[in-house]
Image: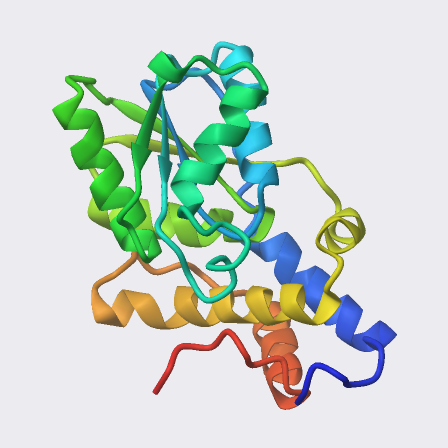
Length: 222
């Protein structure tokens, strides 16, 4: 499928909504030892992380991320740097922010953030992971595997699927990413990258239909 395809159909949107809902953990946010903002194309992560900081949910905030295919042009100095700059523009003090600029995947986001907090002398018993709305479950599954000694709480900007589509402005890209994240949730446990997550049958069926319709640009490379 090319980017000049016809508009997203109602059936495709309904399937994407199922997967969107599955990706969200719906954790009750609570105070944690540290916050970790996971880098991505979505600057809303940084803004929501700032909101959570001002709500007193953590004293220190790590922004983690280098660049990926969808961010190199938008964030030329790296995701973590741009996220940190945005949070500081919103009033988060520089002294409360740790920049981790090397991670290139979610496993590295978690691992490198843990190391950065250790180097800063921050004792972590719980961590609030802040991500794109559709990345919550994969972040949880990854952190549960790579950082099992801490309690993981997931949070994301409280947007509906339609609101998120409008905020990004590229329906095809968003649905491709929903599908790509679900593929990783399904396949990463066998590779040792994450803990297994139950995938309901209706979500699995929606995933197969979207793959068949060509929403595949964010799949893992064979």
